[in-house]
Length: 136
Image 1 (tube, rainbow, N blue to C red):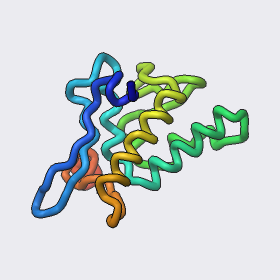
Image 2 (cartoon, rainbow, N blue to C red):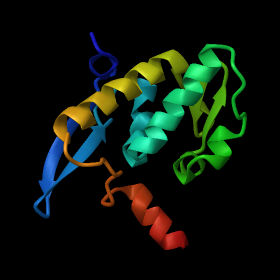
Image 3 (cartoon, one colour):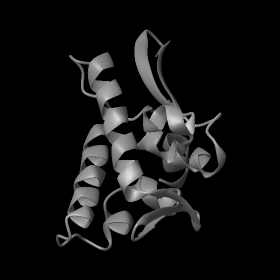
Image 4 (cartoon, rainbow, N blue to C red):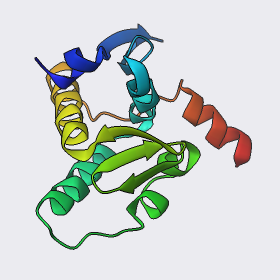
């Protein structure tokens, strides 16, 4: 069973304005995993960076402890923090870093399979995009 299935998270594409948009949908996710919807706002490079930091943590290597404060505005907007081995969203424990890394790899695989000739960019029709526009 994949983490996506275990947490009841849906990955899907939908044509919007003649362009495929990709969705990391946590509407029906179980319990605290609904908080993972911020992942839909991360672009491919941010996802890859997060996986890299998780791998460094898991391997006992040096990593930037301020990663969630400096790497992406998404983490600040959704108050994503880390206290080994748990990822917190808005102050609540949500997911173990090993499980998050697995889930992120599943999401990246979905993006790559469904958009092999295009670079994935986080959708501009989500809440995070509108929050950024309001505060600019």
